[in-house]
Length: 612
Image (tube, rainbow, N blue to C red; front, side, top):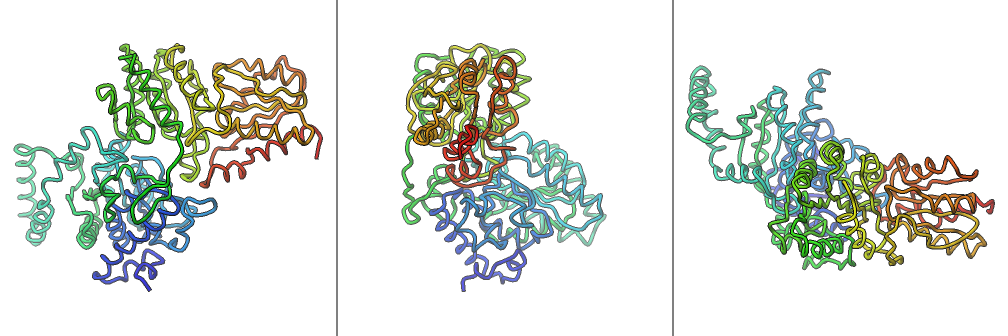
């Protein structure tokens, strides 16, 4: 039996002797590489946190204590050590375990984590709850993999430092988010890494003077005065944290000692841990960005399974073509240059490319500033991450009708990343932004055409939303607000984006069953009078709107509201994602489970038409 096979709970890790820890870490890395090569997932980030996670479980009881992971894609080792080893082959698969911490999976998962920068705030809330309720458990926030570039992390750190709550913050410093970290925070951390001997000196100093408390207090006061007047400040210490580090994040025994010491200090402590993203896997170490989030691959060579052309790649190519003839066009990304297709733009137009780290709110506000001063900014961002910029969309962009373009990638169902990453809400919240124009291309050709419209035919903010992956069977280019793709007299089917492929397939199935469906594709979601939809519904008296977004604020709801006046009596079905909280699985599985695939559309149409 391997060492890993003996581990079923956090307490089992504590039973191991010190000599078993390094072999355990090697077994975990082998398991991660083997499993992720089959299921896909976040590889490099998890390889870099193996020793750190083992050390955490040596110090804390995750079933009782609260370990709050930031950027939760770092939690694979945690799952392996907390009873989910045998289920690991189901990682990110429909009905299997999630690639992110999920409390419904196990009590060891303290909090949902799929975005970034919130762990310190959440952990402080838990620490306050512990104090107020008089309970006895420890709280630890594990932040890193770029999450420190988000402003929310500093809001949490500022409050936690002066709270006096016993709280440990582990800063996993790997100099990376998805791509290499950028900005002042990265430079600050880099300057702090040059003093590796400081922690050893600090421990010896405290050990010697702990028997002489009066002398310790005098020396400590003198040391603090000298440090504040003669040496550059440590930001975390200045905030009020007791700073420990930097510590080698791949020395598991050393990590255990330091984390245990930090816990025993019973005050706000920040432990600065240096790790290497992709550690222990040669190809992941060489290219941690490429192996951050991967599909299936060859575990021996690292060769990735080829994927087809994507909307993100075509967006990047099209933006480069527009930028070639427009020197005012700029591109902004929040640590996602590769994922959003902007690597080519960054190479060709480096002076007009801005990677601002994991700081979507800042990106939207910066885009507003650019637009106010005459530039044409394009912020490329995943739908689920743009949620964080909602205030800026209204306050900074919309109120002044500034012309900024938001390229909303991963709109709709994204699949195996699950609840925290499904692009379920963008139609709802973007529709609430005054003056926002929203485009929804269904093909690569429409993407380029609508990008041109968003850039040069809009007054005020514009968004163009497109899915993860590639186009379907529909490959025409119809950029108008409404297009009638098929004429029919029994039922009106309405959709947009790549969901139009499901609708067109359902129309063919219905035709074979004697039902004549009229298919209307929406290219511009807002503004839209829905006049073609109204005319069709007045003819068919039956309406189905199929979309992969949440029900509240959906296009279906907007259409029903518009048609409520001036339309003859009709029957309607809205097929969507309900509350928008959709688990992980393939897109095809999720469409079927949510009742928005072609078969579900056919069933609804037959019911509306009175057929079995």
